[in-house]
Image (cartoon, rainbow, N blue to C red):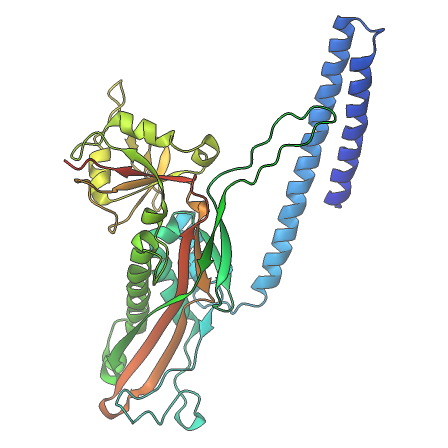
Length: 407
């Protein structure tokens, strides 16, 4: 089906009807009642054609995205045992990210790991065919990615993820204001509006860790030791990156979401969550940002928020009824993060808004190397994992943070 042609014809018919509507409006021979009736009918036809064009365009865009995804999927190596991760909901979406099936992630393994730890003894490397390291299995890489995404609340909050193949600096516009339009009379010069933008230099900062295990542990363990190690690697990287995604100063690392959020809502109390404060917080951002907004909070805030009631005595907190789904507060999803401030004096215990305006950059994906010769003289096997990332807020009007009083 040619969606572009359908949309084009609908818009052409719409243009004809707009011309007809203007002619009817200008026809002095028509009475007010007849003119209103004809204009109303034409207007209804115009709205129907707009809906038809919009539907065709949306379907065409979905088809284009599906074709692009199919092309990208053909380039991926499908990890084994995907049937083990077939549950739905948010968890399934995150696992899809972990397996490189969405958001532009690619599975990357590297061979730059020196295979001996002792100084001066690094004669055996993975690129040396005489000392070939053990191939990193796709499942192992996927498990690290899965652990990373599921252990990072920021990545679960609906942030925008950009994946680049290389780590050079990129300039990204940060919107601090908006363009202002006005009515323009015939023959009058249009008003000029520059909006308000600054620039943010997206860099790439490396985070990594080495995990070790003895050959005996691998051979004799009744547990799936490699899966455990993969989970630990992903969790360790998630903890390090998530803290900086949240509170990084942006000088020698990522721009954190808390310091980048400039809109604030003062809390009435540093001990009790106030119902009116939360209402004000919601309205601190524009309605268009409230549509996809979430609460991003500390567990301490959540404890106090669960006690908040409306004027009729009903709790505003709704526990999730489906496994893996978020709880709701004031009808909006809640993401909890242990790195967020406690609800105390002079703290930022909660952020509210559209987190798609917060960008997280990944250079490729998690890089994994395994070496069986790392501790050759002690039968120690090692895995090295690293990731290069940066983050920052791209629209200052999309998020608001609570500030508790100083005393």
